[in-house]
Amino acid sequence: MPYETDVVIIGAGFAGLVAARELSRSGAEVTVLEGRDRIGGRAWTDNRLGRDIELGGTWVHPLQPHVWAELTRYGLDVTPSPDARRFLVAAPDGPREFGPDEGIELLEQGLSGLVEGARGALPRAFDPLFAGDLVAELDLVTIADRLKALRLGEDARLIAEAFCATGFQARPEDVSIAHVARLMALSQWDAATDLEAAATFKIQGGTRALAEAIAADSTATVTLDTEVVEITTVDEGAKVRTAAGDVYHAKAVIVTAPLNTLSAITFRPGLPDLKRAAIEQGQPSRGTKLWARIRGRVAPFLAFAAPADSPLAIAQYEYEVEGDTLVVLFGNDASRIGREDREAVQTALRLWLPDAEVLAVDGHDWTNDRYSAGTWANLRPGQLTGAIPELQKPEGPLHFAGSDYATAWLGYIDGAIERALVTANRIRAQLAGRTASS
Image 1 (cartoon, rainbow, N blue to C red):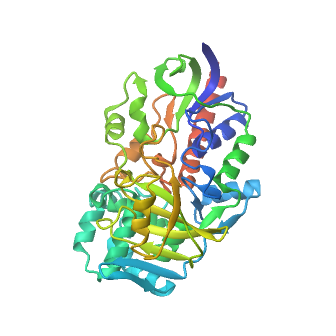
Image 2: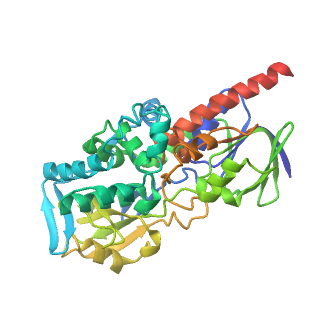
Image 3: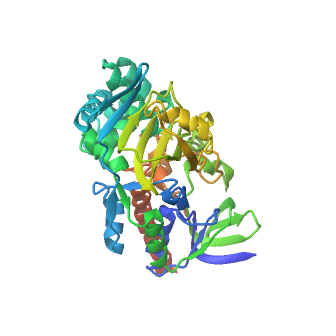
C-alpha cells in the first residue's frame, strides 16, 4: 500500500524521536518507521532481576549539552550511581583493593598516557576536525599501538586495558586513539570527569521516561514492528519500502538506524563509494552489557580485570534489591559469554569478590540483535576523519542521523540528539525551499 508523507524517519531511538518532534512541530507531516516493538532504540528500560534496569544506554552528564537540555525541557531529574567505596583489581594472586582516590589516580595514569600529546590534534572538543592533518595522523593510531608504548605499573596498565575494553567495546587494535582522545577532550582531559560522564548520572524514571516525553511532544506517526528494506531516491524525493511491501513516498528521508545495520537496507541508486565503504566496514563494537543479582549486601565497588583473563572487564555496583545486590558488568566480546550464563558470570565476579554467589543474570544481546548489530558506537582507525564526515553529508533527500554519526559525543544519547537537531534543521530548510519554489 502506498503512503504519502513529508518526511520518513527510519528508527525510533533518540535521534528519530527528536528529529520527528522538531519537524512535526514545524508543520511537517512525519512518519517514523521502527523495526522493534518499542521506542528507544539501544536505550531500553525494563523490569528484570527485581527492579527496572537499563539494558542499553544509561548515563548522561551536564557536559553533554543536548541531552541535558532535553532533561531540562521535560523536567526530568537524574540520580547518581552509588560512589564506589573501593576499586578492585583482579590480579594473578587475588583481588587487590584500592581506595577511591588511589583508584582514580591509577586510572588517570593510564588514560593520560594513552592520549599523551593529543591536545594539539584536538584543540576544540566539539570540532574534532579543526586541526586537519594533525588529527588525521592521530586517527590512524590504535589503542593497541599506545598500550604497547606505555610504561605503566601492573595495576595502572590492567585498569587502562579494562577501561578501554569496556568503554570502546572492541579489540584495542580496532579502535582509533583519536576517538579516545576526542572523548577525553569532551571530558576536559580529566580521567575522573571522563568516568563520571560515562557512568554516573542516570535519568530518574529511566531512559524510557525521556523517550516517552519526547514522543508525546510530537505529532509524528510512529509505526512499530515495521522493518525498512529499501530506499529509492527519485526526482521528487524518495520511496521507502518495508518488509511487508508497503511503500512510503516522502520529500525527505532520515535514516537513524545504527551503522552496522545499514547493509540490510538496499539503497537505489547506490550510495557514493565512501559511504558504501563505511557501511561495509562498520563500527567495531561487539561487546556486552550484563546484569547480575548477587546474594546479600555488597559494599559499592568498581572492579577491573584484564580482558585476556576474563570475558567481563568491568563490574560496578548499582542497586540493592530485597537484601541482594545488583551489579552491572561489561566486556568487549559478546561471543565469550552468554547473557544468561550464571556460572560464567559468577566465575568472573569471583575474580574480585571470591565469595560472590550469583543468583541470576540478565541482559540483552545487542551484538546479535539485527536492529543494532553491536553495542554503542566507537570508531575504527581513520573513521573519525573519514567515514563520519562523509556519513553526515546528505545525498539529495536522503540523510543519516544518529549517535553513530555524531560530531561530539558519538556513541552517547547526546550524540543522537545532536545529529537529530542538525538534520531536522537541514530538512526544515529543504522543505521551506520546495514550498517557496512551488
